[in-house]
Length: 464
RNA sequence: GGCGACAUCGCCAAGUGGUAAGGCAAAGGUCUGCAAAAUCUUUAUCCCCGGUUCGAAUCCGGGUGUCGCCUCCA
Image (cartoon, rainbow, N blue to C red; front, side, top):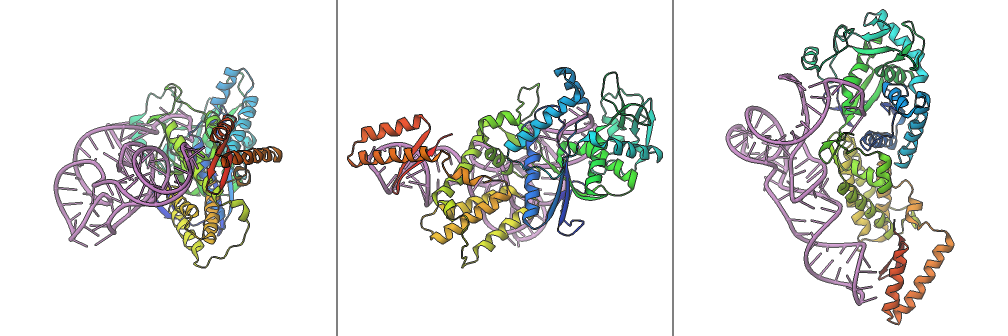
């Protein structure tokens, strides 16, 4: 398969370090606030990456860190007037709750920065000893000019950085691009003892330490948002290679940005949406569809209209599965005389193997669905295609709760009551008593139950 | 100032040299007591100009426009 590698700026054949094993690390949240709809993109995308690697037979080890110590948490703690540790706890829980609501599966490990302080100190010490870092008044900085490979991920040159740097107030630094490894604690801030006095580690160090600890010296994939390329990932590479002279990761994957109606999302523009808020109006699969219908590296524009369209598109998949009564043959073993399963799987693999072209897969899903919907198709074929729809959909993270979504989730007795009403209404229809029949349909609609008269009989569903 | 990305039907979006996937919306047909649903059908020559080629949305050059990074940020 091919993956676009930011490090080389091209699509490369993906070869894992160990056959059939994939080790990946994706930068997780800084838990100082609810995460926003833009944060959902890497969460959903790398969820799909993991599913796909497993689908093609790999054992995946997936790490997503939690940054639970950082300036932003400290600021938040002052705002909310509760200790930093409680801020971290509160928003870590919110993070997992929201992920769950978005039907994003947990990673295998969720290391917290504060649990790796000692290892970080060890790394910083090593860097200082090797002269890649220097201490000034209890702060420790990484010296970018000592590391010859600096800029190789982002394609930046040190001279250019200097030229374009906005006012850099910190006169302690030898070079404006030098970044903080250890920060001296101010009064009242959380602190840990270190050879340079009490303080806390900088953000860029934690990912190096935790990824190596959990995944080994060099691992396969390091991912995150495109904005992390510089400086975060650049700085990770610098620390890793300066300390061990060994690549941190072989493939660097970055997802594109999310804009709101063409503009960057920001609090000052008042176009800031938390995932939590969006989920109140639209369901997880609509959001997932929205993201996956565009290639992950391109920027994506968010607005309500698009989510509504996505929502409709997902609904059509469900209608399609309902129309064939999917649950009734879900586990059936089917003959496939024309080997259509293989043909479609080949297509699916071809699209996914091409740097995760989920947009193309979604088109395939619709083509498969059109076979399922077509009443001229023989039943066995409709069944095979239904299975394929669910199989591929699952890899993209759709249809995770089919049993519930496809059955009308009312208690048995309520369901029977509705059937009873439908039967009475059908008698009225037989007598051409349209007035009362329509009134029943209208009244049921008002309490959220939709009746549809089809040639095969009357169907009902719950309107959400 | 430096670096980079993108520009395809009303909207969203694939396609990276061989003659424009798919979704949403819209229109028309079928079905139907009506409604809804379902289903069928229809709709683009790819921002502009020039070049390479038998052949370009796809490659090259020059414009124009939009956006991002260079500061915490997915």
